[in-house]
Image (cartoon, rainbow, N blue to C red):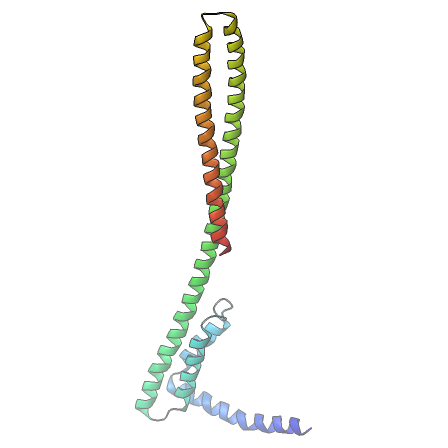
Length: 195
């Protein structure tokens, strides 16, 4: 019961003070600054940002409301203007940082996806080359067997076999190196994304 009475008494004392502060605000030119600060507080994207700068702006506006004298009010109004502007800039900067972070994350995700696709293409190419090498090896074996039946053609067939096997081995080795490099890049990108 005594708490309720106490709260009512405090409210009765504060209402005239608030009305007086509002009438002062109308005279000291702080209304536009208050509106800018309230707009900053009401913006759901910027409201959680620049809390310290917004506090300083509120303190400057409170100081302006309590200032007497024309020159002191002008000085306090200028300080309040700077504080509100600083809060707006800090909130905009924080918002820009959030957007940059989001864009960086999206870019990293796109790079990881591109790396995965490159690795899949490299694996498919390596498989295609392996099958092609196997077909060519089988064909070369058939030719070699035929060449064995003919004494003069035998040396020529072995030369063809060696060349085919060497070129296919080099192509297959290059494809495997490319696949390994893409896997390494993918791992580095995933690691940087986790950091």
